[in-house]
Image (cartoon, rainbow, N blue to C red; front, side, top):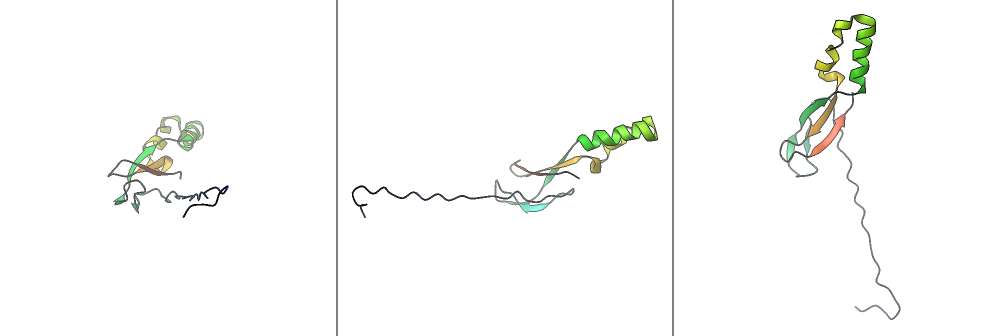
Length: 95
């Protein structure tokens, strides 16, 4: 069908919002938003401000040789989730 003279064709926009999956401190069983495969996430732990604060508090108030403990305990770090299939970043758990 040809639009009447002077009429402009109507443009329709569709907005898709993809919510990031909620992830926790342990590997999560989810469908990867990138490759669409059902996976169990791979975790990489990363030191955070919380890690450094715990180390500082241990150094100041408990015993200075114990400052290294938060750097080896995963619960004192952020847990970054990745897809083991395609390597896509899934999300971060900040505990």
